[in-house]
Length: 459
Image: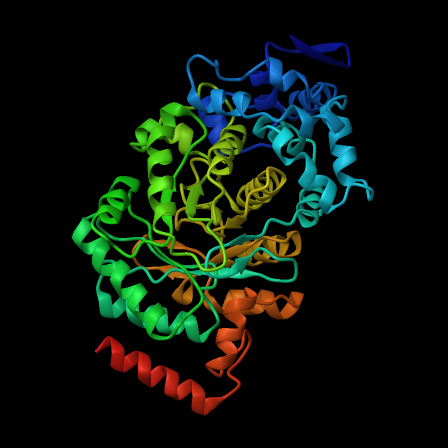
């Protein structure tokens, strides 16, 4: 039992799960599940009570029973007591102050990664203002490698997302060329297929790989098919660079996706065995999003932000190249407007980085949400300041296959320009060789030659 008294009113919270939910900033998904605070005063009371909870409590009181959930077992069984030792005597409130102190630098944050549980990160985020989330995330550096190096300080990457509603190869190729000309694609050239047909996915993989090899582009490809489709294609000799899967923070959520940890183990080992990386072997790409557990009726009464943080425990196990919070994609039933989307994105980025993950964010909203591109511009800038590893690059910021609004090639150029950020080092060198840099075209003759060669290849 946790409690706090204000104006002679005693607010009681039966367990840690309830306390975390009541302390969460307001959002529609928690309203739908009935776990949120019923008033602003109750929320503040819960936050004050949460601030006094020792971090050790999260190791002794699980929010989803150990026997019922393999994600809980993963979190508890893989906790590193030695890494936790330096912060083990702190409360959640003291942890917040410690994270924000000038003495807590990048190296110190790196040293505690394995000792911090997802629930601890979720808890401390609930006591933070947006600027606090940005300030701490900025101190975290998580670099990963496959054919280039993503996440170095001073660098900022993009996923080139050339989706097409009918998986038309020429349409996808046209978007790929446009994105490359704007310096997009150093995180990955990643296609969401309109169908999970193995034959279609194979053709898309071959398309990206042909262009990549022909022009020696130091990046990686991914077709975001279901993990079972990817496994099937690996066994058929497909040119798979990264293995993709959407993940959630509970076993029941992942069951609804048709996956479990055993299947992820198999896919991870299979993708590693291909040895296609040149500068590293981070081979997994995960996507998450607040509300997944509610949409699957698999949240166990846990608030959606804490569920989201628990998904990062899965990602951390597989040392991924990329983790992407598709923050506004599920819809206003979970994050109603621009304010909620912005807050959730900063929380996700903060929690993931604190856990040692290479976090990117799909800065996005659906057309029926109370949000617009100005909200996304604000979030884009905030995440750039916070040190986000990558965002999406989509023609015109409008995904014509998934029917949602995201960020464009131009948006990435804006952020690189105003914040002085650069693409992944290996990719930047390739751009310069083609007569392109991350802001403009530097050599017209080289550029026209490159366009001509790509067009000829695709014919």
